[in-house]
Length: 238
Image (cartoon, rainbow, N blue to C red):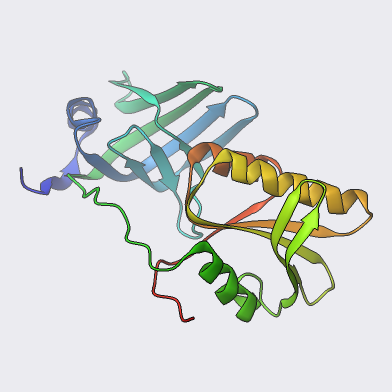
């Protein structure tokens, strides 16, 4: 099968057919006017604007605007239904049951659409977790601009903090490092560290650094005001 299956501007009826046909068989990229509604542990709406909608082959949906690394809204590994509405809109509904969440995207008008089969070969990692910690300790500004190193491998009642930094204002930065994909357990561990130092009366920020993060972990980090930074997989100096 060739990699690019289709790339052109389509009307709403054809867009609905394409999504129904290729969902979970290929990745679908749509640039079009759309509005968004989300309901679940919270609720949100986004009025109509031109956005990039990415429907991955595993059911993950991400919606991006013109700036920023993070999507405006997203739904990991969802069950997706699509239909054309009477007013020539296409409605995409992405549902998850654990937790119970629903994302509704309504696309109006013509849509620039690409359907492609993407690779899934994974990532080759050079360097141990200890090497990543060492490199971050040597260059704390890679985490927060003008940050300085306080300590490494700091013991707490909840485990050992990988790296402790301080930003230019004096705020404590607790850093948890994972050499591969970070799970929700890593996010929860970071949260325990942060809450421990907050109970001591300190102003503290938590940062999880990993080559990748699970959707569940990323949602947990966002819900608790914690940050995720993706670390590049490159050979690390000793």
